[in-house]
Image 1: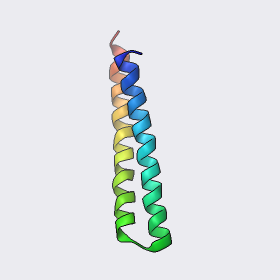
Image 2: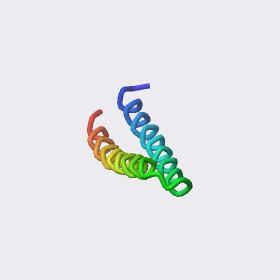
Image 3: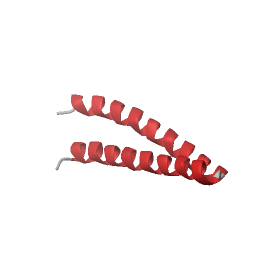
Image 4: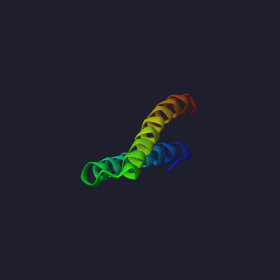
Length: 66
């Protein structure tokens, strides 16, 4: 596996894990009304969005490299 493929796979897996943690935090807030759960959910939701933007930019840049 090349370094390019590993990087893309790593970004995808990290994004999916961030979404799961975000959903877990939001669900925790919905069930127990804990502000920590809401903060966790929002932080990881922002991280997942940032990783998606980063992944898109890196994919476009890596497409140019042979």
